[in-house]
Length: 126
Image (cartoon, rainbow, N blue to C red; front, side):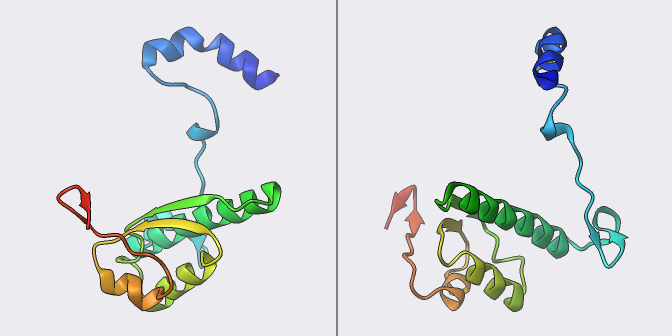
């Protein structure tokens, strides 16, 4: 009820600004790796891994709550991960419906031999 009231109260300002001023999309998440703030010290690969773990956790929670695994969309996640992290990700999503984009077929096949692969060329599935 409080959230709804705050949304109503801020509606004019939200319209003027072109986006909602309050809500969970405005919250920050602080991630620490070995006690250090990821935003200050983590590599790009570590940032990617942290975001991926959060996405996988969300999928697991949704799956438990609804008893129906969600469809997960992952855009080129394998190329920035080392072999161990690639295997970890592919193992965690093996029982879910997942659409993964990738630029390197070998990365995909190395980690997942039983899935379908669709190639897109010039806007067509080939």
